[in-house]
Image 1: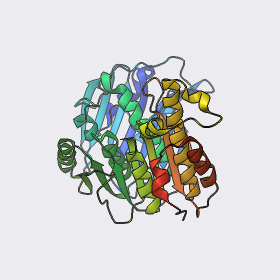
Image 2 (image 1 turned 30 degrees about the vertical axis):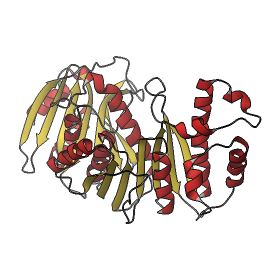
Image 3 (image 1 turned 180 degrees about the vertical axis):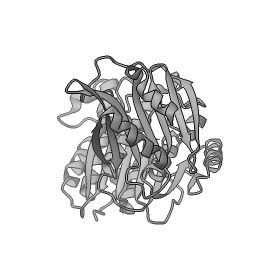
Image 4 (image 1 turned 120 degrees about the vertical axis):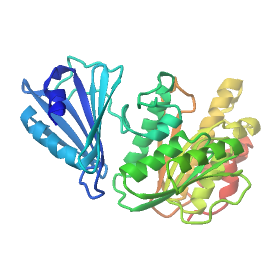
Length: 384
């Protein structure tokens, strides 16, 4: 423990933050704690952010108080990582109290001006955390540093988890079952499993669907490697095949191509799924079928503008139908447009019975411009 104290007290200005995770007990009050050195009223101290059921509790401590706090932390948590300028010191603590220390290099630099409540962007998942799936998926190196070429992917993963985390602020359920449509290499599928199982401490089951057999086989091997018994991947065409006939709490559809997004949303509607997270992709259908015939013909004259207008119209129809089906819907920027033009996320939560508020307007548009839109066809007259 004396070595740990020296990390705190020696060259204190180089310490950037401390990440505390993996409590030994499921009943531990806080599932994650982040600490950083700050200056308040010209006095150096430590500020802790303690995470509990999507709430954050702050605690300011003097150096002496923090050292006492830290001793207690080493009795309750299995991983404590100290991020300093140029190096990360990771302490793995056994249930018997034995501490193994590992030092690795990082590219972090302390900011001399950082004090009080000025802070850098904090992620739910951070460099240095022991998340093995991110290593196998090529986002982290074996010593849990971010691979430079995967930094955008790392930010995308955190952005997705932030959006999900925000939706589950008041959700106290103990179990969750999720379907992932068009899961691909499943970066986010593994992370969402880890998030619910390890951070939210829920009993989680996920089924991922994808067309590619080799991708599905690879993902199942990784799930088996980590002992994720309730994470399965299945080769399936979601536009044709029979899907899971059980209670589903959440549907994910990230970059499912063209009308596959509509089949995912229709499945969620028919099953009355409570949570939907969808990032549509390749909205070709309306663009291929739309005709001139109304006030917006000016938007159909040039191919690029027509393509973008058709994509926005497609997603607007999807949002309108979800609202008619009793969902509260947010349309969010998923990632920065410079990283991907497919940056709209539809986040929906089932909150009430449906109505026909938007249906007439959609029907009028369809009749005027003669376009085909799959969700419009699939939903029929159901609005429950």
